[in-house]
Image 1 (cartoon, helix red, strand yellow):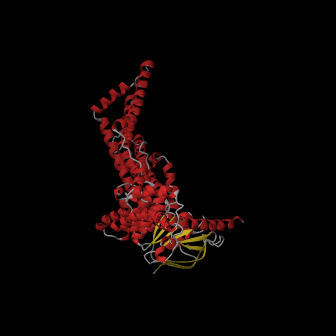
Image 2 (cartoon, chains in turn cyan, orange; image 1 turned 90 degrees about the vertical axis):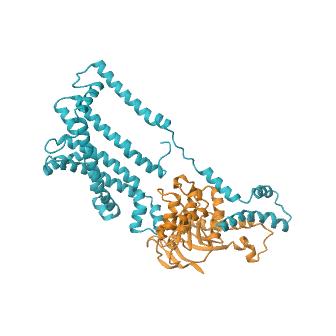
Image 3 (cartoon, helix red, strand yellow; image 1 turned 60 degrees about the horizontal axis):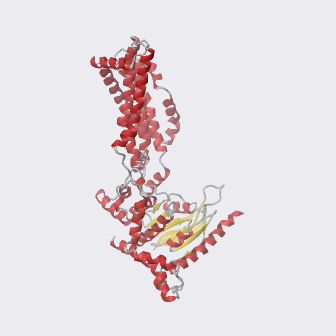
Length: 331
Length: 254
């Protein structure tokens, strides 16, 4: 290392020496324009190349700016909160001015009261717990099935050609369409619900994995190849980490599809040994014509969807993308 | 010692297309810095891929060190999920360096390219020039005798490129690697290469060679060229080669 520095420090001096020293001895120096140019370089000191490079590095490196908590509050939390308040206000105004039947269009306060009642008798929390448990466990099963399947399909071109269109097609099919079939096969049991959830989530996750693998820049594979990666090392060291953003996007969509499918299944398949979930609560509200119960169920379903995305998937995804510079630090 | 030897090397991608490379003969001695110069479509990259073992020639023979060659691209092609240091460490890992040594070795290589302060940064946090230096450190981590460089500085700004030329020459002297450097920039070829080889396009052939060593290293060659400065001489050489390159290119106008 010491030798390198010496060689480097010598190199600008050597370059300068050619016109200045050797030239001065051999010829009558017509070097008037070049002399003032080389003079400051000579006085700049011995470490000029190192300093130049360090300066350039500093100039060309963007300073990454961390957004302050106040700014996050102002730009990310404030606007949606205001919008939400505005919607509630409009809703209340509508109810106050037009005074509709409360069992058809309940006001926000009726819904809040109903929510309180359903919380205190334990039914909403019970339904929430049942649905969340099914949603999350179903989603995890889907991840366990879809991940190796996705890798297999992504790496094996023949399989890809064969089942690729089928998987994309399955993604378009609303998984609720499987409910009648599932009831015929599994009866009114939790297996029906899980089946529908899996049919919703698995194609999304497989597709996400495929998209992630497809989007790997070819030069990364090439670089891996040049560095000696092949087979297992290529898959584990290059392909998998490179495909991670697409895979996580697929997971996020897979969760959304799981949750939707679950609600669809719970709404349609009621009774038997199937536990009482949020979808069941929704259906119950409809059968007793209690719009406040329906609203509570809808809002709870929505809240779960939003919270899981906000508290889990968004931070994971943002962290992943930011680490790769795929996210502007202001967006 | 000969590091790379090409004998009558030819390459065509299909019978319908003409040959990309035709009858290329080239011998590169160990430790030499060879600049391969040519316009687009002259098969420079194909030639490099063949030497790197990424493509097979359709004719002739290639003799390279059995371990293969390290290769650097125009795009740094760093792995975006790894820090600069981990990028270098991955190259060491894939080469089979034990875990315990990797960190230290990667640190040394980053120091060699003057990036020891940026080891924990991710590629996107580095400037283009810094990324190419990490890529250089990663290529050196492969510890191959031959380093192939495919227009590695062509996407950089002029100031950075200028400094990296000095850096590359310094690192070349420090490590004693054999470098084959592809470029379409005559000035770059003359500045870096001990030998400058001009390639023709379609089919790619080596049409002329210039040796810059007598000017760059006058003592070793007993060369008394001090009436002209090195810069002037190389400038003149650059003009000569540029004229020859343009001649080659205009052949394709018909």
